[in-house]
Amino acid sequence: MTDLNGRTAVITGGGSGLGSAIARSLHAHGAEVILVGRNEQKLAAIAADLGERARWLSADVSDAASVDALRDALAGTEVSILVNNAGIPGPVAALTDIEVDAWDEVFAVNVRGTYLLCRALLPDMIERGDGDVINVASVSGKRPLAHRTPYCASKMAVIGLTSTLAYEVGPAGVRVNTLSPGPVAGPRMERNFRLEAERSGSSVDEAEQAFVSRSALGRMVTEEEVGAAVVAMLGMPGMCGADVDLSAGMVA
Image (cartoon, rainbow, N blue to C red; front, side, top):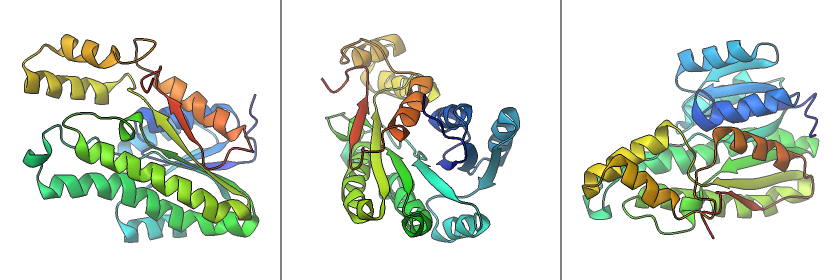
């Protein structure tokens, strides 16, 4: 069992989905968790549900001034775990039909947000000579997924950012790794299946089956499994620069 007592974790996109699941898992293993996101009502509800050792701060990860304000609000807090989970799925459409603003929005949240949070919180970790950054990417960054070019490209960018950053800060004792989930059961995938069904003229069930049939286990992973994977990665102090697939065999 990984013991995270005495450690403080910042989780972006903490108001729902994977972010809240990761926060719950870290909290269950003893960490103090700080939920970060834009939906204050959701953040407050999850923090209240977790109780002691949980709080929230509002921030837009894509906005430099907002992230700087977050960094200032955390002054005096020893953040030793950063989970860059905030992300958006973006449009489901052929590349030639995607508007520039929609493309830029995906990269602003998924890539720029990861960069800004790392830039804000890494200096203290480097100074202390210890810390963990886990960037949540996706197996969709590593294989073709038609009509999802901005999302796939952004997640591959996160993987590249991670591998390079690991070599920049590893010598200071800071570990940087990527967790790449496959399809995760929940509202986001349900939305994607509906959009794909509309695009292809199939049923939602057919769209889902076509997608999960690509995995070795023939299913999606769960939010709880993603949270458990983050804890497991934190329990491996020799891991740095890795990209961990959690996909039910989706890459195979």
